Figure 1 (cartoon, rainbow over the protein chains, first blue to last red):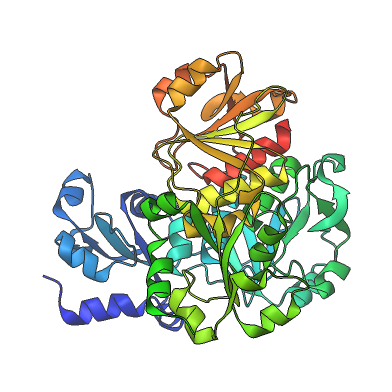
Figure 2: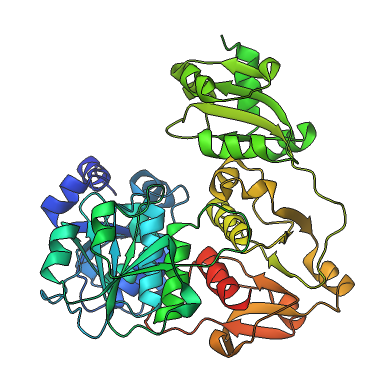
Length: 243
Length: 243
């Protein structure tokens, strides 16, 4: 049986402040939970799961698992349609140094929509990008909505929050490729071996200060009439060309 | 002043059945509203707007515009943060015949997430795709959430709902390119002049029956460990290569 303090505690994890204090985050549904349990760098704190899901697992740390009914799951879930299991996990642990040499990394300037951020991380995960550097006013990667849309990419992609101009100054030897509406057409760009792909805010794009610090500007050729592309779609298209 | 019947009527348009009966849909915010007003094939039924937005418009059909306060807008809006204006429009009118010859069209098998569908249409609009053929169990393109994420692409991209196997049988001379996880790597595919790009459901992919009717299978090469890509991101990547 769930007790009131448990329900309250889990609900409190919708707030970034509480997640930061506790160093934990919530993930839901069989797929992402199973992937996180299998990931080496994410520790389980507690699982709340329906019996039918528990029965299907070959191994579960018994003392961290609590059986719940679907009604109970509904009470603690952040999803509209809860899906068998909700896990509280410790934030993933990554090596402290960011490896930017001989790699492509991503930089996000104020990407504020949780779904967009999660989809971008999932996409980074697909293309083997290891590091995503976000401005401090971007969405929080441990927001439940972001976690869900990363599809467990959160365990593999190292997301950090930085003062972006300061960060670029410190790493001035790494070339920056800014995604803009008036740069070099993407097909003219050669494969990139090392660099930072910079993606801007959903409506305002990349702030001027960062554009000025970018050595390259790159544009996805437009054939139709849409004014812009979704940030996650643009990220995927550029990565698929340069990786 | 808004009257109760107006509020009730607008709220009822969240239901597909009512939208179909009335032949209308709702769009919100200055950007998409202004684009729809400028589009030739979308008729305005009624606008509810705050005064500051109305003042900025060079031309508005006075008898179709009602000034509202931001509190009133809040009451009729489908958005969490209403944005100055809400418009009721007649569904766009397109030429009745679907033009598939010498073009690339999109086909969506059970794309059910409204955000995904909208983002795919926006992406189709960017790449000049004129026709999107959806399975009947896909999300409704006039769902307010879909409308918002198309960013007015809804006025330019012709979206139809069909029985997909039947449709493909009828157009058996148009080659079908199915996006799968085990097809020809995308970079090996030449530019496509004519064809239908087939995208599957978010979790189940493309149903077997449709796969069997596809002449080509195409795959976005994976470098990292993500299990799959978001449907809209995958659509964007493939379109950017073949268009």
